[in-house]
Image (cartoon, rainbow, N blue to C red; front, side, top):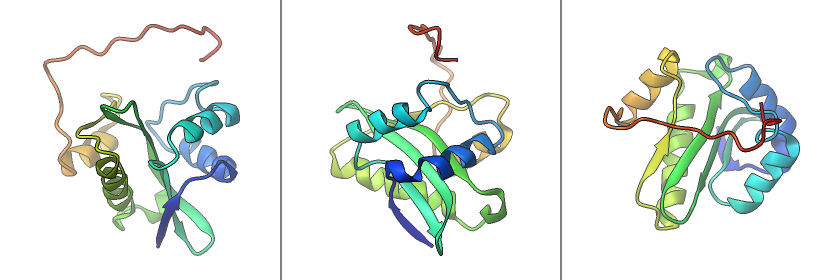
Length: 143
């Protein structure tokens, strides 16, 4: 397995992987080709894919605002789970964030995503019970 930086040329494959991953929340504009292209341009060093041979089997989408890192989408092809690929992707993104002097990384997981919540807990990500997560939809077309 090889881990490398994600490029926009990977979009079709990683988008398919995201859509095939149970518990993944997708947005029509944010996760479109143009949305991901803009995200990768803003965050060129913190997004990675895992390859086995020529096949992309895992992906992690992460960015930061100069203060905190945020993991948005993490997925591993169901046929390749249980091999440490997800853990290696997370470790790689944490190293990239440290290199950029980011001291904390956060993420949001649907409460109903048992598999995802188990994964993040096993990697040491604490569940916060002192926060309420709130959204304000600015663009109604971003469904």
